[in-house]
Amino acid sequence: MAKIPHEIKSNIFSRLPVKFIGKCRCVSKEWLGILTDPYFLELHLERAQKDRQLLFLDQSVDHDDEEDNQRQVARFFTTNMEGVMQFRARGFVGGYIYMIPSGHGLVCLVNRGIFYAFNPSMKKVARLPTAQPSTCGRFNAGFGYIQSTNEYKLVHLYNIKSEEELEYTIKCEIMTLSDGGVVSSNSWKQLEKECPALVSGWGVLVDKKFYWMVCEGCHPTVDQLIMSLDLETETFDFIPHPHVTSYVEGNDMFLVELQGQLCLVDTFAYPPITNVWILEDPVKKIWAKKYTIDLTKLEGFDDELTQISVLGYLNGELIINSQQEMLDFYNVGSRIFRRGPNLNLRRDTEICIYTETFFLLKE
Image (tube, rainbow, N blue to C red):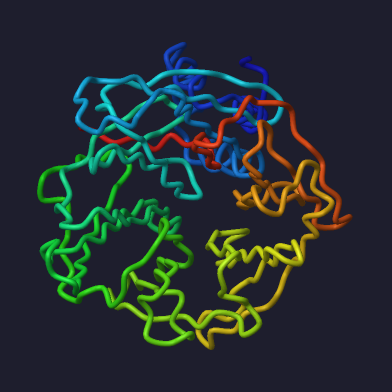
């Protein structure tokens, strides 16, 4: 090892998972120096971003009894399409567990209104300070990573009106997570400005802005179907959707980040196609159609039962969940589907993509 150049050592170590690197740091002072050097950390991240992994949360346990306060164990498994590794996380109360992806290393877990920051690479879960309660059953949030500051942002939207009132007043709070930082009860920052609309789904972060789909019937005009929150100015805005997008019953729309851009995925019931639009110019709010996917070529597709969700982009392919026991991969160049291995997925299996990271919180 002493005769191997520093750069080659770093290159070799950069191919190891984060969990193994943690053990290698304990071997010697030399290895510790190599594996904590900024050059190595940048090299490892660069390689990890090219080999992003899939995280699955098995929800096979019955979670219907919301009064059950018994502690449960969450069963996760990860795969990089070459191998599968299973592990468990403890400390959750009985009830459904949601995963909010960040597009990077950490994943936000939500269990009965409690937020957790989860690093799948290190198998570490940190409970976050209690958020403000919402007076309605709706639960909305967004989680994302800002590379320029190496920080994660968690946004929580909550209603302060009573359930008896027909109107709503949506407030917003934001938490910033820093590497090696300590989260405390005063970590939440309350915004003065109210959220202008009810939203659905998890927020998607792109270029320091979160985006949500506005709930059907809660938008003043058809040009206000997407709401944004600028983290720098702490202001809300609306983004017009593509003018040919159909907003009718039977169609399904959701937002996703693909290759650093905001995308609107619109699946038509008839004809069965999925259009993927990219917000080409966020300032002028101009959309461009990037892909049109013919769903009749998807094996096992049923236009009445199948729900399509695009999880992300990896190596020229869109990763697609069609609620079957395996995932599908759509090659954007050849426009051909390929089916992944059988993972015994269920309809309620939570799925997201993450990048290996050394990011860690202190409780």
